Amino acid sequence: MARFRGIFSIAQSPFDEMGGFVWADFERECDWIVRAGAHGLVWPVMASEFTVLSTRERVQGAKMAVEVVGGRIPVVIGVADTSKDGAVYLAEEAAKAGADAIIAMPPWATHMNRNELFEDYYRALAAAVNPKPVIIQNCGPPLGSSLPGKFVVELCQKIENVSYLKEEKPVQGHSVSEVIALAGPEVLGVFSGSGCKWIFTEYKRGVCGNMPAATFTDIDAQIWNLLEAGKEAEARKIHNTRLILENALMSMPPRAARKEIMVRRGVFSIAGGRNQLDALDDIDRAEIDYAYALLEPYFTV
Image (tube, rainbow, N blue to C red; front, top):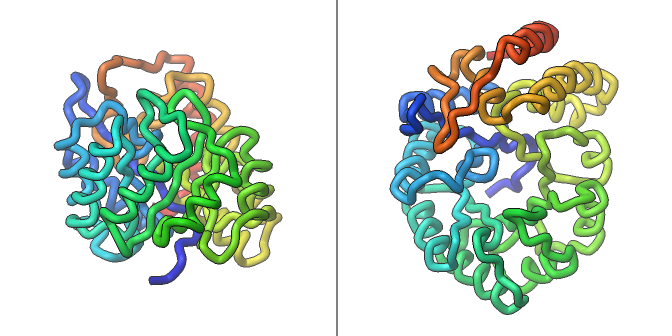
């Protein structure tokens, strides 16, 4: 298997106005992510609102993602759960579905507090999907455990198919540099997160890619491809325009705002949420109108 590299786009979870999962939108999104130029697809993790999904939805969604993508790009399934047993079950189901890899942070509701617990957890996940890769997602609280860089690298050294990291604990750039400096051949790559906000410095630090929410998949893929081609100035021009819309969204209810973009792009039929009925107001929509129009010339799908 070729090493993972590039923009591994995180599919969002579409809900209707009462929180029901909209399967037709999810199917369309998985195909759209591929056509938008992503180098991989990830679901469900934090940007997917994985904590409000049922186990049944997660298993069904993993199967659908693999089927829709159809081998065009790697599919990475998120299996983090509230316990080792829950995560192992999701990992086993991901492997059965044909996922190319899994990604998991440690249990997120009640956090583990001893290194041997973390090691046992990742050993169990690795065994459930062996020989497929396991990606450790290392992020900060409240969901993440902020594991020390030396420890996550040691997990890759000790457990054969634990071979990638998604390092995004604060300060993200320096935590990325730390694990890359410590990594040996057992670490096949280090991804960053936070929606490509600092992709230029992270690229220079040596990341193998970024895992952003799917909202700007085609934009992020273009930026990465330009960096790979040594065309930083062109990449920065697109990224600067992207940040105008990104900054606008950050002042709004986050789930509603990002899903509004997915509706405008013809991917989602509705910008719904689960357990919360967030809504945009006229001022939000006017700001999106302005920033969206600036970025629209760079859309490819």
